[in-house]
Image 1 (cartoon, rainbow, N blue to C red):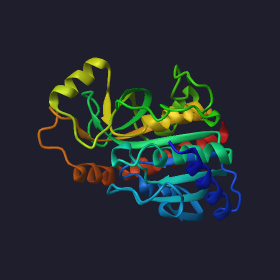
Image 2 (image 1 turned 120 degrees about the vertical axis):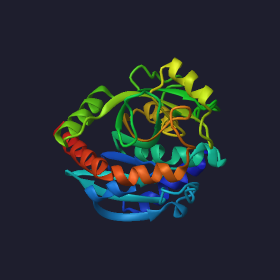
Image 3 (image 1 turned 30 degrees about the vertical axis):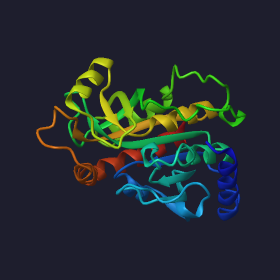
Amino acid sequence: MNIQVLEQAADVVRKRLNQPKPTAGLILGSGWGDVLTNFTVHATIPYEDIPGFGKTGVVGHSGKLILAEAAGITTLVFQGRRHYYEGEGWTPVAIPVYLLKQLGASWVLLTNAAGGVRADLKPGSLMVLSDHINNMGANPLIGPHHPCWGPRFPDLSNAYDLAMRAALKRAALSSGLAAAEGVYLASSGPFYETPAEIRAFRTLGADAVGMSTVPETLLANAAGLRVAGLSCITNAAAGISAHPLSHEEVTETSRQTMPKMIAMIGRFWEEMARA
């Protein structure tokens, strides 16, 4: 991870957004971009204008940093994420969390598309993350320690903030939804897992699988941000699904689930405004 590039990114964002003071962050995963309709947009920066960030490499990630507001909460919205499997190291992945920390945000909601491992997690379900398993074989904090990431050995006993998880569940109920709760397992990608791997992950305690979110959770916890996570279950995992997996299925299921996603995010911001 290149700290100098992270600092350059923060300088550019401060100038372009006129010294913003966000309270919160929202990182939008595959297919989540349209939940931005909950927010009043004040300014936008393409990712490629931010040092070290660059264009997103996946369909469903538009690649825009947006200064916005919902329920009176000033929010930095990252419309799309960079992934470790894109092969550009940890710097692009770390930029959103670094910006939130440097600009004074106190909490972040991470969203993603995931494959359902647990039987009740059907395509179109929403799952609040209660915990995670890092199966990526890597960690963004490996390497020389920098004090911006807090202690050298961060505690992850409560990686996903209990109060924020409760707020997400209240937001689901008030939206007429039944949001499940479960453990998210992240692999590095870019592949869909084999049926044997899914059986192993189920044994390990995974309820859903994906290729993101865990790195940002590690960084945000290290930096002292409160974290919540929300998955849209877009497909049944390998060996459970009756057909081959594809990114097209992921984006189509997200599109169909979008009204639920929009409603829950809007209510969650209202819950956090009352907290």
